[in-house]
Length: 440
Ligand code: PLP
Image (cartoon, rainbow, N blue to C red):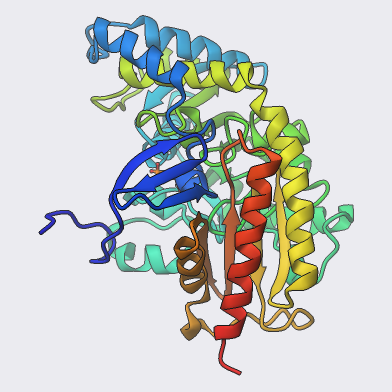
């Protein structure tokens, strides 16, 4: 009998081994990790250089409390992270995961406001749907009603604007007017809330699980940056899923040449080799906080040397193996092949994403964009079918007013053409089975 519990009682096969893009359970069954876990294992499993760097660090020390020691591992990783992120973002603060990083970013923004005499600013506007983490602070900015509602009495929910789902609204995402249309929603929200009370705007550059790889329309990102500047609002980019090369650039925001004030990293940053996250912020944000007495926030495991050694080795491997370029190249190929599946399978209503953050969405009818009935639990069933056939994919149902089941296909950035063939073959068979099972 197991003493573990997660979201439910369902037990999964026991993981015996993982190498590269493959994982094996105790019974010897092989799975292709088509979602890099939860878009985490960007460099593949059991990378020898990372394991070796971790072994070397373990020989030296595995813990040094941040109030007693700096460590070479955390200093090195901070320096490497600053090199990788846009010019001007010079300050790094480590945590152990995405939710902690989102909390830290919001608390840094708030302390910056206090340190600069703007105490009345506390609202963090975000988007819906969105997912920014499961702690109460991160939930308050998450736009996903089923996750947030039970906890509403325990937190102060923050204002939301709609995510730019042009494909559902029948708008052309390449038309700059579409970008303006959705960015104007931020402007309107700021006006409604009162600019003097708005602290920050938090967004993912390419949506993750909540929207199924939603890519912003033309012009949107630049307009968002301008609006934040105009109203003196801190732009926080949640790059937990998009960061560390997943979309074919180190940061998702790099595609649009937008420099956030605070970047949030986790997942691919240490690629699952250790629990790690970080915020990277400009001097302009951090210095006033330090001058005013310091950042009143921190976790016991912040800057853990083993996690930082893993993170550093992961960034080195991303460079050595050319994984960001590979994400862009293989992402284009996989995208084209998912488009091919859409041509053959009527049930796919949309394919979207960037680099190797890709998704397709089921629709009962492409023209009216009607989703499959909720009671089908289509996203769960599809994942199950693919899993039985040895392919792991990640799926969600969007639940903020518009129902829709989407499947994320996000293999490690190390994928080759042969892996893509295997992914597409299993997806094709799974789609056939899934469609055949649907009630007439
Ligand atoms: N932000 C985004 C965009 C995420 O996708 C996630 C997790 O899926 C989080 C934050 C929370 O990260 P964690 O689960 O590591 O706390």
